[in-house]
Amino acid sequence: MSEEIQNASGSGERRYDVVVVGGGAAGLSGALTLGRARRSVLVVDAGRPRNAPAEHVHTYLTREGTSPSELLETGRAEVADYGGEIMTGEAVAAERLEDGGFRVVLADGSAVLARRLLVTTGLADGLPPVPGVRERWGREVLHCPYCHGWEVRDQAVGVLATGPMAVHQALLWRQWTEKVTLFSHTAPEFGDEEYERLAARVIRLATGEVTGLEIREDRLAGVRLEGGRFVPCQAVVVAPYLDARSGLLDSLGLESVEQEMSGHAFGRHIPSDAAGATSVRGVWVAGNVTDLTAQVIAAAAGGVRAGAAVNADLIAEETDHAVAAREELFSAQLEEEVCEGVLGDRRHGL
Image (cartoon, rainbow, N blue to C red; front, side, top):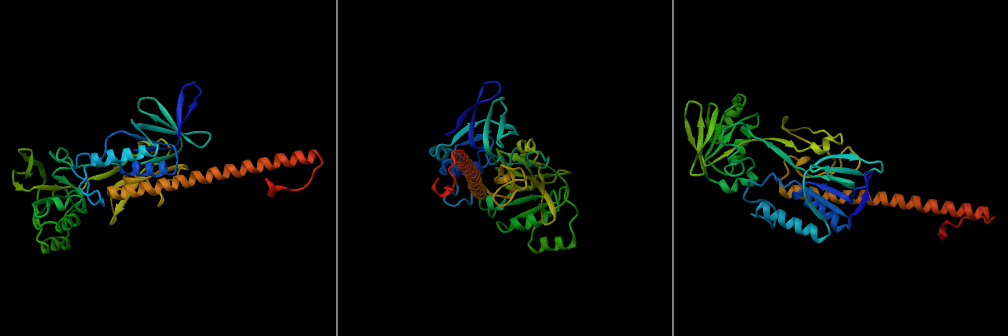
């Protein structure tokens, strides 16, 4: 159970063992783990899940095809079953307290207290500024073949090249369909070996900058190139720049750093160890805020690991306090016995 603490102004602020900031798969899994460990837990969720535009969650064993909203609704109910609390709101800042805990400030001006923080705020997708891309994001504009490849198998798929990984991306999507067109768009010039690999896999190349997506009857019809050329396709693949939502962590001195793949930066994340511990004592992260490429099931697993690590850390602290209290008690009793002239070490009898 949480407890109410009176601050200097006299207003009560609820204190929890752990406040989880972010209520997606990572945050809810961490909260569930902590709730089952009999910890008081609050999940603060702004209600803006990254995968909200998607119709289904994929490659999540036993939950294949579940809608993102259903997965979150079920997760919230499971957390509540173990005493966890869910709060709709946005955590905007956090500060360290003298006792080593944290005060988390919400956008409405209220605050909650926590002994430990688990931040699972996810990431923001930086999409190329092509008309139609953001509007169709998560529908016919896709990024991950493991999330969406099966649904567009054997269809005409266009890959919008915006960086040095474009050829790799086109070759990857070729596994799901033979009808792949790579739009050179704003990517750097391809090398001879890259052209050879594209030709070997019969991937079409469309040169020139893409000026927009064409939508007909609320469906993607194709891609329009500069000069007016139109290329039909049923899905467009982009590589967004993945930027960790780290505003709350910034207030604690944790800054995001670039994450690379094959020597190329593709986003910014918050570094952590394997269990999600950050360089700030008492703060853990899980999910896409620290692992930019984690799918839903991987984010959930990261939340479980972090939740277990937070609980172990609290146990260690509580044990240290118990040892200190025991030693203080023994010292007090020893001093009393000395004063009474009774000597002897009866430590084992305490």
